[in-house]
Image (cartoon, rainbow, N blue to C red; front, side):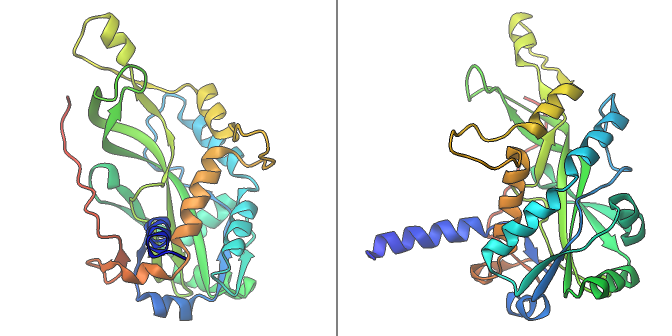
Length: 282
């Protein structure tokens, strides 16, 4: 293969593995987590969901989550990065209440996310029952982030930078005992739903500099979570949003070239990108 093609391939592979933070050296992670257990997708019902139909949004997330863990398991198996990837059965709400003991807000701007703490005894028992070395826990939760929201219709030069409400996926690999050996942090690919959008049209037609945020309707959120790929030959019944989320997670959870990245303050590995964002409204 020509050298330039090899370099391009290497760049693509590194980019694909660029999300997530290893809390232990990657070689140690490989030794500790040879068989990965995947829990059903969980929902943090106490997280920040400002939508006026809050309870209906929670019900929507719970409904769309059903059965999605089987797709994630197959995607991880296809990567062949683990000896085995297994289902960890259980009722999502009960698993959340038993396994999760607390959370804290980390990061700033578009990298703001919720980091969870786990019950060591429960993690040990779940791992023992399913004969796995680590548990992949994916928790959908609402959070407020400060980001640039672009006008997608008229011009890419028009944007609003403000706080807005989103649903993100906080993912972690938890060892027996409760130690987190990997999480996806607040990096790109974790957003599942935008609950709000800027009404550039109103500002345009009202000749106003004030751009208001509006909530996406419940029906609109349902359509977003249900929408599938438009390609004719795509046979998958998995929706596009979940497919994108799982693609990010599977590429992040393939330990390998991530060892080339710098160490973060916690001793883990993450990409060498600052991803800084500004603040305020424009």
